[in-house]
Image (cartoon, rainbow, N blue to C red; front, side, top):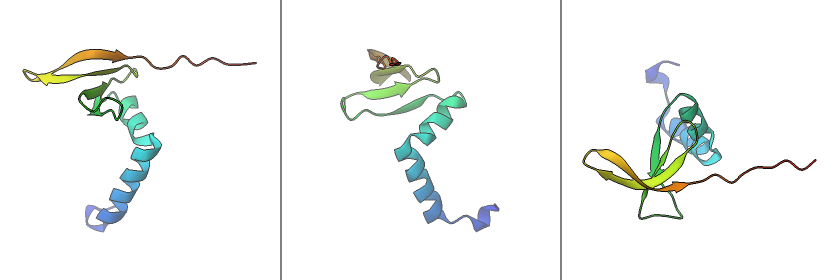
Length: 80
């Protein structure tokens, strides 16, 4: 698709859908990106998600992220 043919409204809708479904986060992490954002359960902190899925809460301090709390993902078990 040529840049001049991009519909910004449709692009925004697609990004919103991908963001809500988690698809955008998954794709960014799969490419090795680190994601920063807000965690609704801890709005006073910035959340960092590393490509390996590790999540932590912290702050920007002196130009870098300082983790204060590590968030553990729930252990998934299979029931046979």
